Image (cartoon, rainbow, N blue to C red; front, side):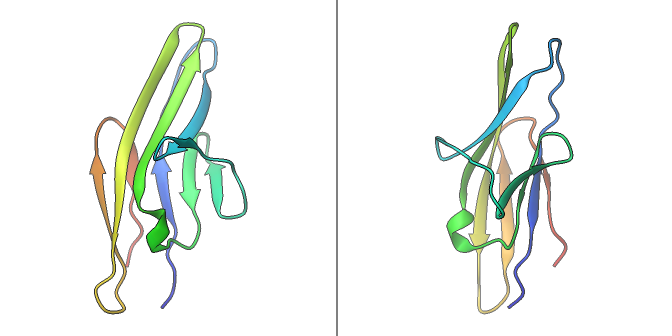
Length: 99
Protein backbone atom coordinates (compact mmCIF):
# COMPACT_ATOMS: atom_id res chain seq x y z
CA UNK A 1 0.00 0.00 0.00
CA UNK A 2 1.29 3.45 -0.91
CA UNK A 3 1.59 5.85 2.00
CA UNK A 4 0.00 9.27 1.70
CA UNK A 5 1.15 12.65 2.96
CA UNK A 6 -1.10 15.06 4.83
CA UNK A 7 -0.74 18.77 5.53
CA UNK A 8 -2.32 20.84 8.28
CA UNK A 9 -2.62 24.51 7.33
CA UNK A 10 -2.09 27.10 10.04
CA UNK A 11 -2.77 30.73 9.10
CA UNK A 12 -1.36 33.00 11.82
CA UNK A 13 -0.84 36.74 11.46
CA UNK A 14 0.38 39.34 13.92
CA UNK A 15 2.70 42.20 14.79
CA UNK A 16 5.22 41.47 15.98
CA UNK A 17 5.48 38.32 13.85
CA UNK A 18 4.24 35.41 15.98
CA UNK A 19 6.35 32.47 17.06
CA UNK A 20 4.48 29.35 15.95
CA UNK A 21 4.88 25.78 17.11
CA UNK A 22 2.93 22.56 16.66
CA UNK A 23 1.76 20.17 19.35
CA UNK A 24 0.47 16.60 19.06
CA UNK A 25 -1.47 15.19 22.00
CA UNK A 26 0.10 17.82 24.27
CA UNK A 27 3.71 17.20 23.19
CA UNK A 28 5.69 19.76 21.17
CA UNK A 29 6.50 18.45 17.69
CA UNK A 30 10.17 18.54 16.74
CA UNK A 31 10.75 18.81 12.99
CA UNK A 32 12.52 15.93 11.26
CA UNK A 33 12.44 14.15 7.88
CA UNK A 34 8.94 12.86 8.70
CA UNK A 35 7.29 15.92 10.31
CA UNK A 36 8.01 19.21 8.57
CA UNK A 37 6.83 22.81 8.84
CA UNK A 38 6.29 24.03 5.26
CA UNK A 39 4.71 26.93 3.37
CA UNK A 40 4.89 29.29 6.32
CA UNK A 41 3.42 27.55 9.36
CA UNK A 42 1.83 24.42 7.83
CA UNK A 43 2.64 20.99 9.27
CA UNK A 44 3.26 18.22 6.75
CA UNK A 45 3.36 14.55 7.72
CA UNK A 46 5.17 12.44 5.14
CA UNK A 47 4.02 8.84 4.74
CA UNK A 48 0.98 8.85 7.00
CA UNK A 49 0.73 5.89 9.42
CA UNK A 50 -1.83 4.79 12.01
CA UNK A 51 0.37 6.08 14.84
CA UNK A 52 -0.09 9.60 13.46
CA UNK A 53 -3.66 9.72 14.75
CA UNK A 54 -4.22 12.31 17.48
CA UNK A 55 -5.02 15.91 18.27
CA UNK A 56 -2.82 18.46 16.51
CA UNK A 57 -2.58 22.07 17.64
CA UNK A 58 -1.02 25.07 15.95
CA UNK A 59 -0.05 27.62 18.61
CA UNK A 60 1.02 31.17 17.81
CA UNK A 61 2.33 33.66 20.34
CA UNK A 62 3.78 37.16 20.44
CA UNK A 63 3.84 40.09 22.86
CA UNK A 64 0.09 40.59 22.36
CA UNK A 65 -0.79 37.06 23.53
CA UNK A 66 -1.42 33.52 22.33
CA UNK A 67 -3.83 31.87 19.91
CA UNK A 68 -4.34 28.25 19.02
CA UNK A 69 -6.31 26.03 16.69
CA UNK A 70 -6.77 22.27 16.88
CA UNK A 71 -7.90 19.32 14.78
CA UNK A 72 -8.18 15.60 15.45
CA UNK A 73 -6.61 13.27 12.88
CA UNK A 74 -8.28 9.86 12.77
CA UNK A 75 -6.91 7.16 10.52
CA UNK A 76 -9.15 4.30 9.45
CA UNK A 77 -7.72 1.38 7.51
CA UNK A 78 -10.42 -1.01 6.32
CA UNK A 79 -8.67 -3.73 4.31
CA UNK A 80 -5.90 -2.10 2.30
CA UNK A 81 -7.58 1.27 1.80
CA UNK A 82 -6.29 4.09 3.95
CA UNK A 83 -8.75 6.85 4.76
CA UNK A 84 -8.29 9.94 6.86
CA UNK A 85 -10.94 11.68 8.94
CA UNK A 86 -10.46 15.13 10.42
CA UNK A 87 -12.49 16.74 13.16
CA UNK A 88 -11.68 20.44 13.27
CA UNK A 89 -12.09 22.13 16.65
CA UNK A 90 -11.24 25.67 15.56
CA UNK A 91 -9.84 27.62 12.62
CA UNK A 92 -7.17 25.10 11.64
CA UNK A 93 -7.38 24.23 7.96
CA UNK A 94 -6.61 20.69 6.91
CA UNK A 95 -5.39 19.89 3.41
CA UNK A 96 -6.71 16.39 2.78
CA UNK A 97 -4.75 14.14 0.42
CA UNK A 98 -6.49 12.71 -2.63
CA UNK A 99 -6.86 8.93 -2.51
